[in-house]
Length: 440
Image 1 (cartoon, rainbow, N blue to C red):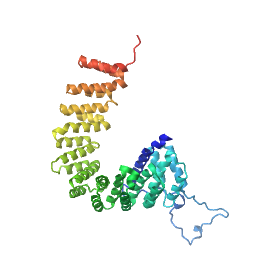
Image 2 (cartoon, rainbow, N blue to C red):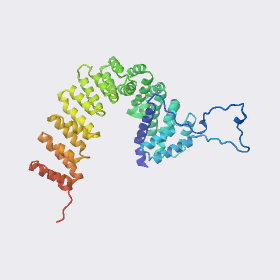
Image 3 (cartoon, rainbow, N blue to C red):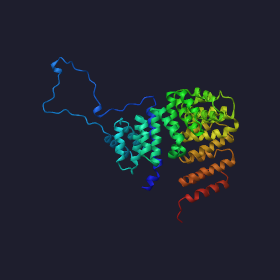
Image 4 (cartoon, rainbow, N blue to C red):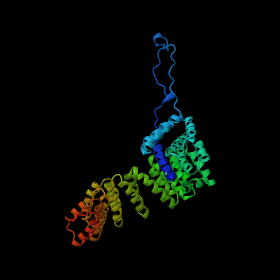
């Protein structure tokens, strides 16, 4: 039990993150996808019969009461959600299925659901997840009431987790009211006492909601924020919304109206999101900037985001527009990302590079990335490094990892090398402790 309570903040954060992803995903097209309606609220639509024909008059059999569909109660919805959680062993799929059940709560049943949860055993981990989901749903329907309940009836880590979740959901339906609440609690210092240094992060979902409905007004409000941490969090939400609306260039231009320090923050956040959705467009905008240290930094940021989606195009662009001094770092970072997902493609691309120190560093990175899945391939790649010192260091590192997992295969491969005798002797020392003892 102590272990469970110790992990409660982590569980709450995990569940709140899943719920936020679920909510933002379902709002992706601006409207929530309606769930199937069950119970007494569901009525079939059929063509109306002609009233003047006797055969169209329906008569119920005498003595038989018509069936009445059972109304879906908060208790039934919670039971279904709890079953989804437990059958899914609190996995991501189980949590998302439970959240989907909770979405069928309406303005009346959501209050009943909160009352039901108050009377249940709060020691089980599924109880906290259900609280987050139900409170998030309540916030969609009536954010002010949901937040009042969270502030007055909950405490500690649970209150903090629910406040974060309620603020996020409330910001989807009524970001203006959510912002007014934030400003009041910020001025009184209550937010800091509840959430500590995480309090400004509530501005991210709030400004995401504000910017979706009125980007110009959101920008004006964002500029008026006094503390830098709050400004950065607000920019994060606003940037995500602006990029989704296809207005990245407009916000980047407007960033010229603010101080140089804040301009850098705004450009960084906007380009981070823009590079994820349309990296080539973000890269093209960057090339229009005046040459500067900021441009170089932003190019690295955009390029690394681009590498995750199209590494070959990203690397071609990065290497063409970056300085020679940055080339080694770019290659190393890019190959590390590329090799995590598609090591064979990264290796094929590396073969076309000219030999040199930069290429050696990229090969060393590739070898370290693939050694756990292909130790022999990593060993072979490490052996092609031109620089002797770097080659021997990388070979030794890769071989040591190979020797721990597959000592016999590593020893056999060592016998096939044409390394200098001194190097072979050192490598044998690495594999020897892992080989099975031979009987005399």
